[in-house]
Length: 86
Image (cartoon, rainbow, N blue to C red):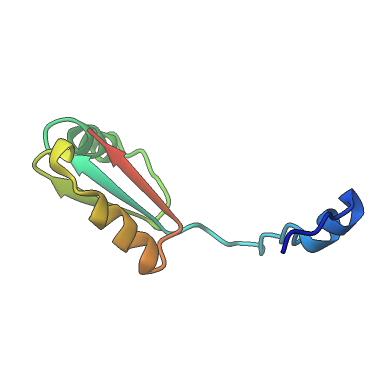
């Protein structure tokens, strides 16, 4: 059964945006190609550039062969964001 809702009813049914807690950092997993993106991340480490400890880098032989199942599985296990770089 389809019912017509007014704009006010629709707006009330949408959840209000949540406040981000102070000090919260997203848990991010980065899939990086061994020869390209991982080499860049390694160079950043050599240059003593820093990035948050909540970012975990996973080195892969090639991100072109990264199966979408692994990306979705990361979200299922509670990761806030996924980054695939080749």
